[in-house]
Image (cartoon, rainbow, N blue to C red; front, side, top):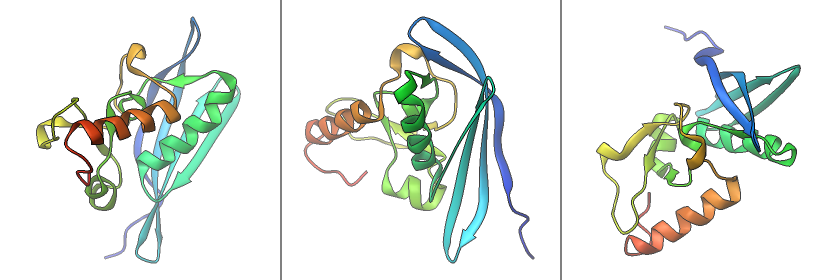
Length: 150
């Protein structure tokens, strides 16, 4: 039985912001297929007349690459995968394609109860840059007794 690709995984409106400016944009996430054993995910954002696209081996990394395109223009996308306190584990990426990530609590290990959908809506006051998110993840790793492998 063969799979049909590309497969649409997400198609909805999301909030994007730049300073006090707020806009609705169309977000689409795709599983484009496989490069040998590795999946290829794609994310698209339609903001006004502009189309931003990024691909990677998991949806979280596709989102990171999309955010890096938006950040120079001052835009932030209000999804769980852009929060200051979320990051995927290796298993989330390998087994789940980065479609779910962990919400981290300082000083605590994560559990299945901490999983959130990467592309689900998030509050704007939780959104940070890619660099800030990576820094927070490193700080969390230290606070939760060193490298936990998530």
